[in-house]
Structures are given as C-alpha cells and as structure tokens.
Length: 214
Image (cartoon, rainbow, N blue to C red; front, side):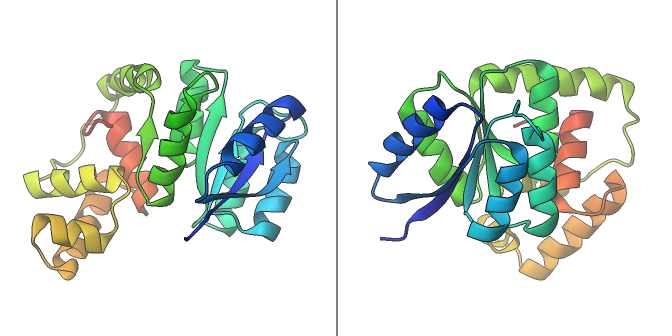
C-alpha cells in the first residue's frame, strides 16, 4: 500500500503527540517528522520531503504562513493543510493565499482530518463549511472593490473551477472531453485576462474577485 508521508508542525507537544498517535493507526499514513515551530518545519520539509504538511498558524520563531511560503518556494509539490484553533477571517485568507489546500479547525472530527489528508494528497481541496462561509464572505467583500477585468468565457470559467479543485491538465482534458493542448490554451488566456502568472495566482485572484467559489 502506498503511504502518504505527513509532517506535523505545531508548537504544542500534546497536539503533536495526539496527531502522531491518531495518524499512525491509519495504514496509508506515515508520519515522517514533528516540527515545534516554523523554522523547524521549513528545515524538516526540505530534508524529509513529506507529501502533506499539517501546519499550525501561530508558532514561535516563524508562523505557519511564512513557513508555507518558504517551503513552497523550494518544493512546490508539497501540499499543506492548516490545522488551527483560529477561524478569524485574516488567518483564513492568509493561509489560503500562502498555498494551503485545506483549512481545518482543531476541533474537527478525526475522520474529517483523515479525509482532508487523502484529498489534498490527490490534489483536491477541503475546507470546513464554517471556514468556507467566512472565506466566501471575505472574497465577496473584496470583489466589490476590485475591477472586474476582461470577461472570462463559459469554458474558461469551467476550467478555472476545476483548477480551484486541484485538477491537473490531464484531468481537466478528460472531464471536459477536450485535448490537453486546448486546456493549455484556455489556461494561458485565463492567466492573461486575470493578470497572473500561475495556477495558484489564478485561483486566488478569481476567488478574490468572486468569479468562482470554493
């Protein structure tokens, strides 16, 4: 069985120990390390090459958002799940912007955490409804103040929505029954219309403007 390599980053020893015990009982998870702060998380991520990092937001030395940015800059394939006690709008917004694919509160049921790890590993996203509603409200507020830009076509919107779910070009091609080269052309047009350079920026900007929803 293929195991998902997980790195836990949290400054509370009890939380780390609890997560380690919980995840280790799942046959498809392998906890490869435990970091007590953001600096240690960056170092461990570079050395241990986890598939998924469970990242707390508030940690000493370096917070979770900055740690995600640094890890992502050197290894964009590592995926992040924010696991925190904070549901403040600003924390949510910063975490998603930094590249988190899932945002869970620490009181989430363990099955929801397991589901999030498996989903994020496959390139999907998972955000709790209580968090998603706040995120949507925030993006809606920002979109009212942002210029609408050049209009996206219906097909471009479909592709953008699939990109937001983490779908790769091959998956988008299969789902929409179009060639991969056509998908690439549409994505290039999306980048141009939104004024961005990559997929993450495209999804973030589209959410910010309220063009798509999670």
